[in-house]
Length: 206
Ligand SMILES: N[C@@H](CCC(=O)N[C@@H](CS)C(=O)NCC(=O)O)C(=O)O
Image (cartoon, rainbow, N blue to C red):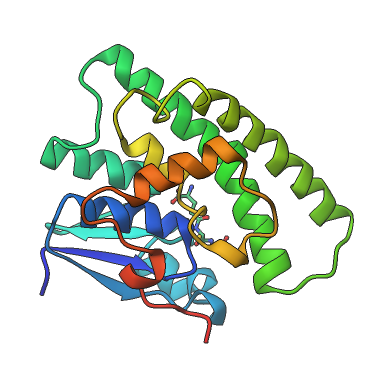
């Protein structure tokens, strides 16, 4: 058995954040497929045995189970010394971006893609609202990347992995990725060991 086990599925950009971190840190890890589209995360067994919050990803390591992609990345950064912060000021700056990502960027992107691409929901007031929220959050990231190579600092960190979680799904994204954001994703794609989400985790939708 691998040292690290990640409950995850390929379509999950939140899982990808943790999977990419594990891979880029060259850790001994394996994915455990979550049957998200069959309702596994919503069932009592998953909530009792894996994650009371009913979400993926979940990392198993040394008898612990960690959920929330940011917490998982923080944990791995602490273990490896990679992609983290070097001072208290840096920690705050890094978490400012991760919290923005979780609330405004990933949350809206993931829900819009789920409805439009995965569930094939016809355009409606909810999808239009989410499109507006995605575009507004994208503009914030676009403006920041006009002046910076990476999000929190001028080096790649877990804040970048958090914000980029859904941006490698290509045609599955029902919105435009703006130019500076696109160029930044290419910098992440160029990192040694980078892999696409579907090459790191098994797909749950077949
Ligand atoms: N903030 C959480 C979000 C996790 C999340 O929403 N995961 C989705 C899959 S991408 C999930 O399991 N959702 C279950 C549900 O909403 O029922 C994180 O970063 O890990």
